[in-house]
Image (cartoon, rainbow, N blue to C red):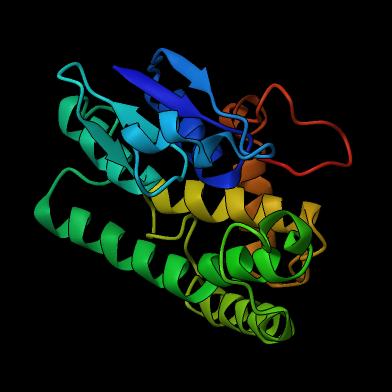
Length: 216
């Protein structure tokens, strides 16, 4: 297998996942800042043009970070980061959808339309006028999530899962691109500090990540 990696939040989430699993995969960096992921060689592997992507031994490809995590989890179930029972796995996926659809996708698109506008305006449809609203929605939904975490150590309750990894990475990214979250949130603030203290948090940063730059 070969993992196509990049300096970007979704690839970082996958790197953090692999560190928590104690797994190492061969990696090849894709320079997303220069648009290497939009060139024919990469598009032949992953027509969506996004990172990360995992090329399997038969030459086929799995894209989308969470889908790759699910694939790896099937092959390496321990330590469990999705769940050991059908109920646990369903709960993890429930929280993953809540976090991604309500919070992190809004952070992502707001970056495309505001801080990252010059980079993305020639690559994807952009809507600069939507950025302030998306940022407001992301913060509102983060407060909404905060209210559901009373008494919980992690997003899915007492279990550290891929949802904690995903939200942590995107909040860390957001803070680096002018979208910090409210550190006074009673549950998200302490949760963020707990996840940040895990060795995998710092170790998952891309080698080209620089102080003051995008954290991915």
